[in-house]
Structure formats: C-alpha cells, structure tokens
Length: 158
Image (cartoon, rainbow, N blue to C red; front, side, top):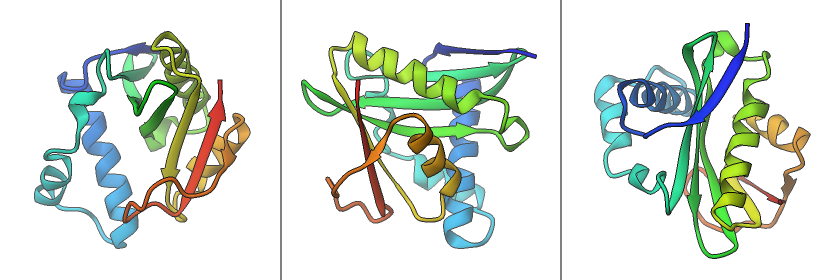
C-alpha cells in the first residue's frame, strides 16, 4: 500500500469530493451533528478555492493505492508567507502517513512559489490536526487573524 501526493486542480470530481468531505467533517464536529448537503454547499460557496492554483497557491490530492484519500491547499498571502488550508485525510486512511506527505507537498509548493513561511489557523476540537502540525515543526504563534473558527495559530519557516 502506497501514497502518491500530487498537485491537482481543486475542481476535479475527486478534488471536489475531498473538499466536500473535509467541510462535512469540520462542520459536523463543530456543530455536534451531521452537516446537511445544503450546509456543505453553502460552506463551499465563495470560499476562495480558486486561489489554490498557481500562481496564487496549490491544491494537492493524496491517493492511497490509487484511491483519492486526502487533500491539502496552500494559498499565498504575500511575498514571504502562505497559508495552509483544507488539510484532510479520510478517516479510513488516517495513521498511514498521508498527513505528513500532504505537508511535505505543500511545503515544496511554497518553496517553488518563493515563499519562506507557512502559517495556518485551526480550532480547539481539531486535536489530530494540531498534533500533526506540531510533529512536523509548526510552532504555535500569536494570532494573525480573527476568523470565527480560529483558536490556535501555527507557523513554520521553510
């Protein structure tokens, strides 16, 4: 069983399914109930995903034995900083190394885009994500935004 993580357009059927699964999980966990299809549609409307393509970013898809199993996005903020977003590994594939490969792929893209620092924000309840970031050299930093779901802020110099 092997992982392959490669850049892919954010709007392919597989990328879209992964983005929907990501939003479904984070919204459902936040609300404490399953998100509806309508809520997922609304959450993905005008979410800025088009910036996850060069030259303003990158979207990567991880496949485990060919099956689309994970995704992550990178959005350039300015000449020196990019934001990590939409990091998601389907539950059945967690613990198999996909998260680390997603981070490596977006960090590589950031370097190629001339960015020397990657930052992100996340929530209290996304404990697995926070642990992943800490394991891979992301350090908690002071708040850099006031997003309604931002409760922890991380950054890593590349």
